[in-house]
Image (cartoon, rainbow, N blue to C red):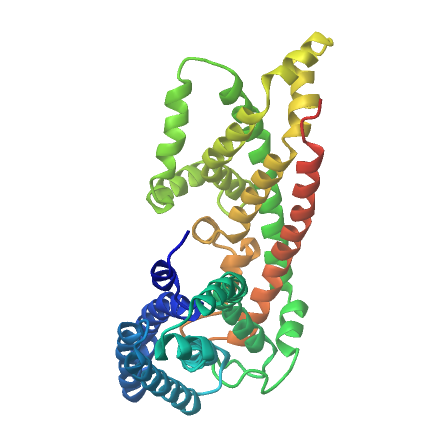
Length: 415
């Protein structure tokens, strides 16, 4: 049986347990966010941010213990001060989505601290000695409430990380639909589709789009044509130089691509492949091939050899085994490899800029970069074109998501 003394030692309100963790996280995040105020050169907000970090550290150190009402009162005062500073910083800052997200890291922790420290469970725990029945009730409450708090905290944390991704996207969308070419301004203060009309009605965008489509599809097809048999050979056969070749694939990935830029250019110039789709396709395939071979080799290793042996017993030759057994089961890996090859070519900038000197041969990344010059910045046109460029990629991900799920469910090994 558990003694009353052990029960009292075990029982701590779940609010205190969570505050001990969350305040540390809030302190670390607010320290990192001080860089934003420093970059903005706002001395007032920077000093308030520093003071908030000090208060967070003090609040964590002053969190109450059992039967210690004085420390609870101190924690309440610190929480109220933190909340007041957070509200003031929020009121004096511009009401942008980014600023709201920043201030949530101070508003939410300080508000929860004030709410929980003034609540009944913490007040009773710190103000008087609890009976055995009260401790039992508190322990049962901790079990039931902690699950709900854990779920809420997990969703809040995930929402903050989602905001890191969504805020730049919202900013770009606002610039694309706003009048003029300014980067500032309030979100939603104006609306126009002139930037999209200008981009879509221009001949250059469609020329860049066709070039990128040809190069990306060509890279994906040629990469699969080479990587699939290479990955299968490395997975199933033992031959001289096999380990050295696989190691060389890894070794190539360790070096930055810019170091081969000059040799690439000289080779392309010698072969007459500058300002051509074939030159970029070959260059991108060479760059992406090592990783594609490793990806496919790793997936081929997971396919049981017994399936191939059974197919051979049924009269299939090696080519039929590969095309009728291995390839259908490898649909997810082939889809991922194709997607990787396509995106690598779609987003690549440096090689396309180096090998293509004609505007008629620009790909989309190089064409978008040409919209921003030293004499003028068409930020609205740039944002609109960026959204149009990302739309095929988003649709491709949606398509491949369903394709991968179908491939995984259809490629299961059944008895």
